[in-house]
Amino acid sequence: MHDPGMPRTRPPDLERLFRARGTLTAAELGAALGVSQPTVSRLLAAAGPRVVRLGRARATRYAWAREIGRAGQRWPLYRIDPEGRPARLGELRALEGGLFHFEPDRPLPAFLDGEFAHGLFPGLPWFVDDQRPQGFLGRAFARRVAAEIGAPADLQLWQADDVVLALLLHGEDGAGDLVLGEASLERAMQQVLAPREVLRPDERVRAYPQRAEAVLRGEVIGSSAGGEQPKFVALRLRDERPTPVIVKFSERTTNPAGRRWADLLVCEHIAGQSLRAHGLHAAESELLDADGRVFLESVRFDRTPPLGRRGFVSLAALDAAHYGHGSTAWWRLAPQLHRDGWLSATDAHELALRGWFGALIADTDMHLGNVGLVLADARPLALAPSYDMSPMLLRPAGSGEVVEREYAVVPPMPEHLPTWQTAARLAQDFWTRVAGEPRVSAAVRAFATRARDALVEAIARFG
Image (cartoon, rainbow, N blue to C red; front, side, top):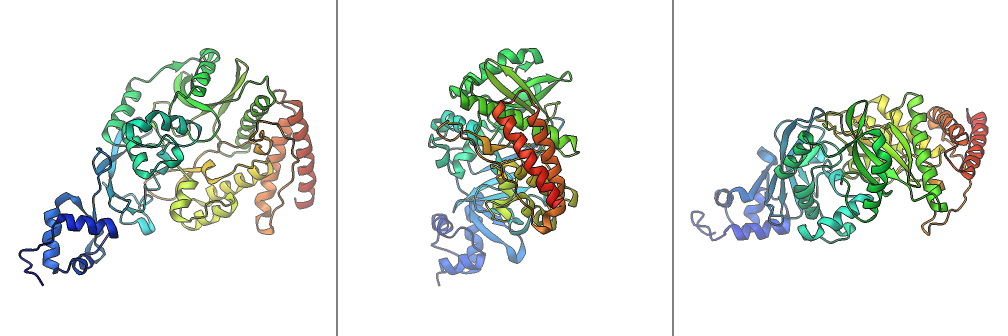
């Protein structure tokens, strides 16, 4: 063996090894390089901050820090609290092998749990994943910033490094309360201190159609809201306080597809009313007709009137990190989340109840991205209010044609019967409200009447 006092191995050799292997223990490094443990220690020391130490004592592993673009290799992660005050949570680092490491400034057991206890992630950490641009607004955002960060214009082709660069440069208004990097935090705090235009209620009739047209031209009116339906974010006076809202809008109702999308927005508003009327949590919303469109304005539950923020993580992100279902019924995931301490028994029951409610109001788009939790330091996490619930069975076809479909009651398995019974009565209330709602078309009112009658019959059988 070569004299350990004068090793021929240099940091570039370490870098190539880490790029190929990801993380290694000191023993693995010594074996791979053919050097003694004291030599490994000297090599690691000579590499300085390029080597990242993971874990402690016998569990210690090492990784090689990786540069992303010209943005460096490590960045602070901040939280903005409900009063609009920032606090640093820790530091995110990019590592060779496509890995990321998060080093918290204080204990964050909900963030670093199970296989992620040492802060090592195979890609972007799950609690940051909902910050990535997504949906209708995300695609417009990607087209706007792609050239600046050297990313593809097609959002589906973005890698984790592209997301990090976008968050560092334009991540001041992401979902939830997390902000990556000092520059984005500075812009976020500027928005708190000097908020953009705050609309009075009577100004919306003029402003919302203008913003809808801007969004359809590809301009980004806020970058935080996921989902495929056209939308923008705004600040409007509500109870004399500036209140952050998300505003969805339909096509013009002079064509059949526009009329049907308008119906679905009205139904989404009614779904929230039905849930809240029965003591469940749902985003507060309001309908507005302007310039031939229907606008659904929903109060953002991840924002506060003092222009502060609340945490958020979708079940899609949580599931991808900890369960890997990809797609599953909410009532099946709920007991697992309770068993593992993510949800209280009460919130797990509400999640299952919402799942059955959605199924019974013909919401065929109930993926795990359409439900989330309030991200906090420790578990259990609170269930976020309901959002994006509507009878999507009635949506126009991809061609834009309105295709009439038949409602079918989703029957319960015996173990789910008590929850199904409660949800069925909620869904009956929903269909009754839709059937009597003059703001929806005659065809949807007739569909609602048939659905209600079918549900009443099923309740008589199973209830």
